Image 1 (tube, rainbow, N blue to C red):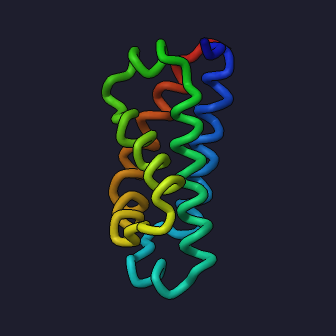
Image 2: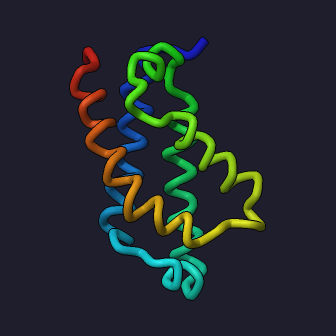
Length: 116
């Protein structure tokens, strides 16, 4: 069982990774990721952090917020970690440009509602 009090910390880790993505690669393209290995590795690592922190959230919190596609967030992390040799940079770029901006306000709202 995961400690519910750790949920706040995990959500903050997710938001910190999102903020780093926003500052570093807000409009990253597939070509950018293909041409710059360090940009690709850094972007992938931050997405992995988001997914790992999501996986470490309590089951109760995830169940209480079905509006967040937890299975996709965690699944993306698993795919990046375990299929690292087949990373599709177009998918990574899409995650950064389209899905992360949707995820951020969802996480902020959850965090705001958690007791301190």
